[in-house]
Length: 209
Ligand code: MD3
Ligand code: FE
Image 1 (cartoon, rainbow, N blue to C red):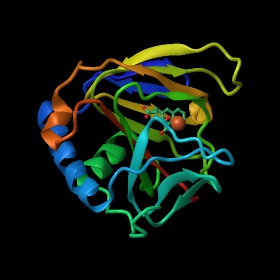
Image 2 (cartoon, rainbow, N blue to C red; image 1 turned 135 degrees about the horizontal axis):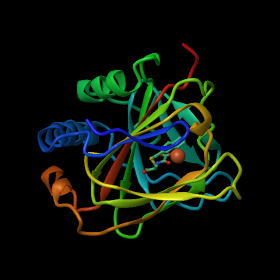
Image 3 (cartoon, protein in one colour; image 1 turned 120 degrees about the vertical axis):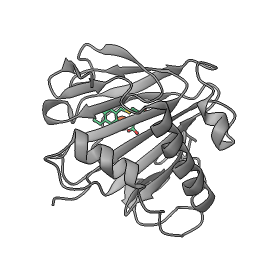
């Protein structure tokens, strides 16, 4: 398997998931979406909607609304617990983050149309010791990562369907975002009844082991 160092703490695994594995993951996602549909997160205080829609699986899910960013055990609209994490995700975590305790949360981001995610840090977890694992499905996206200060220089990387990225150590608190999605670059998501776009899954440890 190809493994590319992007900067300290960031490892890129292009084509980590085979076409068959992407199909297995997408089928598991379709079942997750029936139980936990995408919701539209809103910005703390202002309530401005995100362009990215989200859902989660695993014990904890990340949500955002006027009350702030947080992890919680239930879907913000249905009130039901998040669906379990599929085995294929746990297997990927064990292979790519073998030292870390098992993930507690998997955030599923859906980018349709012109959705993007502005430069931010992920710091709502109680423990930054474990890495974050990202898996991409569907259309290719232009991803950008900088340093731990917002003004640090950034590097761009195209993330395609099946790619994995691991962010640990000095990169765990790096600023990052999605500048744009290349609409129509993949037909994979149609298999799940979605009208194109991109899905990103991020697996995380939230609390100390
Ligand atoms: C670097 N998602 O959900 S994944 C997010 O493609 C998020 O949906 C983007 O940023 C997406 O918070 C980027 C790559 C990623 C995820 C988490 C990170 C990079 C990271 C955490 C720390 C450092
Ligand atoms: Fe992030």
